[in-house]
Length: 100
Image 1: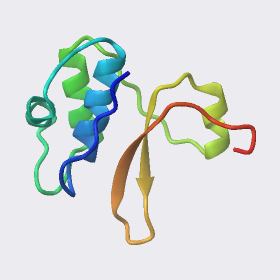
Image 2: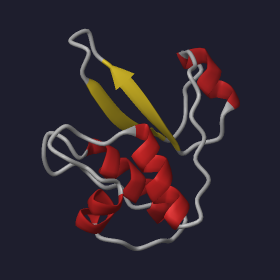
Image 3: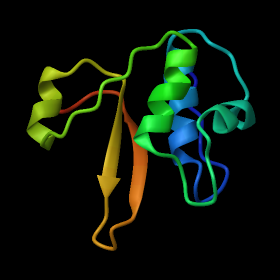
Image 4: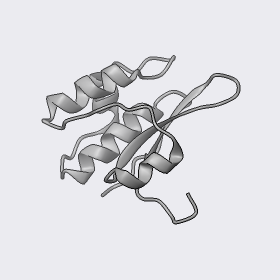
């Protein structure tokens, strides 16, 4: 799996989608994926990430869960992290440790 890194403050969602697609051997430029995710200077929504992934035949489900719930899910996963400033950030989880 190739890991894509965000290129600016607001394309972390598109970078996560690109990384998930690479897991399924889909080769696509981050800029193309950002367009398909409708990424703006405000970021990317989960809905638009789901729509972009579905264009490549990848099923995307969203769940609200605690960090302990991740033990029951199969990686790779996209996690949405909400900070104290109410800012959202998307990251890829490739596994958990026994300390989680």
